[in-house]
Image 1: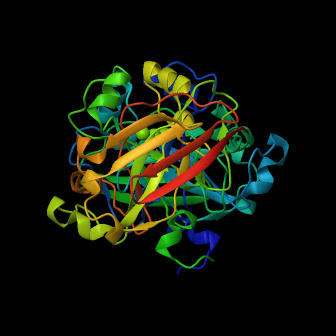
Image 2: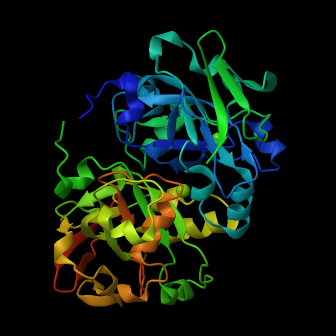
Length: 218
Length: 218
Ligand SMILES: [Mg+2]
Ligand SMILES: [Mg+2]
Ligand SMILES: [Mg+2]
């Protein structure tokens, strides 16, 4: 069995909790209302993909979108964590993509169905290396960017988040116990758009990390 | 670390994939259309609860429903598993409840939002002991029942499933890789209803297993 090395959380971590519409400019670009409480959905750990492997377009989608997001890696687990203590539960961060089959998600939304097929498929969660907490002293003020074939598509600051990282940790842990190795995806700034087979995606947290992935057919 | 003993899959298994509306009589009782393909949603492993602990009504729900379901425990993992080979990937079964905050789910459905708050909360997945595969020679023909305070509420046969276990394993693994220790909840027959604080739930797979849980406030 893999030792529980937090720097390889994707090998043993048990959940990925994602926040939708956490940047007002992104909510608006998809013509969604600004949420009054966090919108949460899940990806399974089988969704992880690491640099060196490709992002695969699901066979059933013709509109796969990139969403660049700051991921928060949980160190110390907990239930009903107060907002004031939330950052003590953070081990570090990862740069993440929330790959989304937008066409499938639109159908799910219109039919009132869960988003699983749109959000939980294999390779729907590309992640960077683990970033120890000390390397991002203020996670509420870092710039995330994403390029497709060298063209800048997303560029936003985590200061634009509607719900802060401590608020999210507290809100989620009220009803879902957080465990070591869990990952929280904190939402995407505006600029999401479709990727095509053979596109090259590059993303970064300014001054901290970059990563790149190729897009292939499933 | 826990050794990977399949008979304690809930301690280390990494995903719970649930099928909605897989019995026509249950789809009808909630006034839902009969699905033409499986409806899937996820629970996190933090949702597991074992006999001896209580099912907790989330603070934000006034209408917590029981759904008794046959759980399929994956032994050998795989991707794009053909239906004909699907049963080779099954290690065994568990009797499960898919506890559902129906009031919250109704809001999610009407707003096109994911079902996380309705389905993924702590204690939303009570499970029985592990049942080795050999003890259920025909999982497509067993009777599931559930009583609340000794009153029979659900009583249905897995032969009524719309999508069979091999079909589900094949369908899911096409886009979500299955891993050892994963659990698939295969849907509930009709008779779902609300539970109240201090209710006693008893459920069984006829001639195979029974389990009981008390309901408490969060
Ligand atoms: Mg997102
Ligand atoms: Mg979901
Ligand atoms: Mg169910």
